[in-house]
Length: 248
Image 1 (cartoon, rainbow, N blue to C red):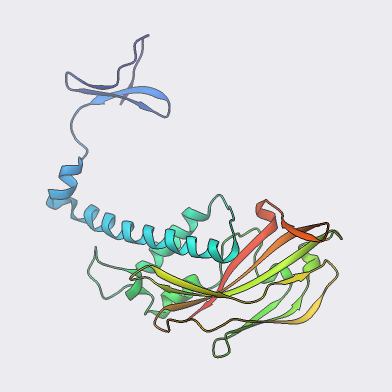
Image 2 (tube, helix red, strand yellow; image 1 turned 90 degrees about the horizontal axis):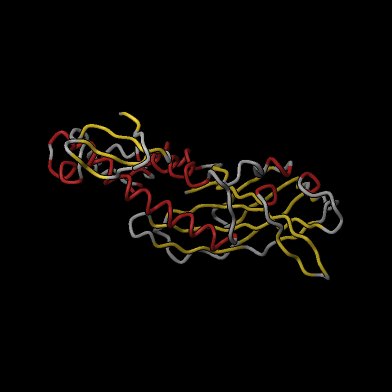
């Protein structure tokens, strides 16, 4: 690869050379080599690329839909590295499908493996607010009762101003990785001030309508500012946290 020089910048192919922009700079290289869309689809040497593309596409769509479900449960949130971290997580989970042939590995089969379930347990949507540790709390999930019990909750670890409150939310997400359909049930939220240390909080949700779906116990917190008796969420990655506590 060589750099283009001179006043005129060329883009395209000319006399056996390709001219294009790379990182904002004009460069040139000899035409040929590499691969095309046609070669990826047809060449035997590209079989691994086709297999990886197929699996990557399915996992990407599942990740996108799963994240959409979490935002419907807990409201909009932004974390700059979340998409990359979650994609890596779901690709690693997909690799736990030890039954399907390469190119057909999928999350449905993967989650039948306990190792896949362990990968997603305690996944933090926002590592800056790691839950439940940031609250100094311990969490216990009772699937039979659809309950989450939090003990020794200290909101003062995350908020220290009188006009702020911490909103605690818990929900159970039923997710079908085959159809990408989902349903969530949320418990009543709890608001705590900075001095409201609580020995135990119990969240209870309604049962999910589809027992065939995988179930995820998801807990989240958000820092709220009180204005005229109304609570408004504060923006910024230091003001929210969401964790996938358990799944079954």
